[in-house]
Amino acid sequence: MFRHISITICFTIFGLCGYTQLPQFSFSQLDSLQKTEPRKVVVFIHTDWCKYCRAMEETTFKNREIVKSLSTEFYFVTLNAEEKTDINFNGHVFKFKPTGNGTGTHELAEQLGIVNGTLTFPALSFLNEKNDIIYQQVDYISDSDLKKILKQLQ
Image 1 (cartoon, rainbow, N blue to C red):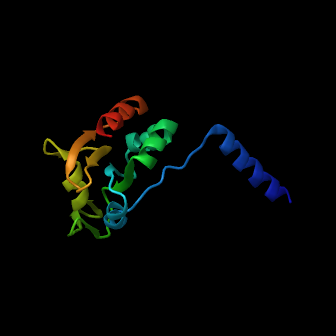
Image 2: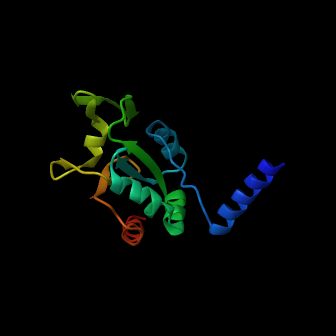
């Protein structure tokens, strides 16, 4: 009984605070999504160890206006740059490239995230409906700056 009451209270608090979960899609879902409803794509390229990536997850991507825009106008995809599984995207299979003992970078992270010859985290890659890169942004992005970018790309 107490557990049921605790769960109810948690959901109520989240509801009152306006907590909204940002829907995330995988690269494998994009082909069918684009056929059903073409949209631009926002790819968030991150790593587990990147403190600025975590900061964006905890602030920028929890902003209500950003969540609404990314949910209704775009498809939002996250990509761990150190992902070891193959990813089939846009008719190509991208693989993990080891660079040392237990380290490496995924080819798709390089393809979408390299700006001026460097892969920096976090990175956002904006794609059009045909999966062409139309804009890239590296480093931490505040919610106010991301709002401006999203508005320009809509």
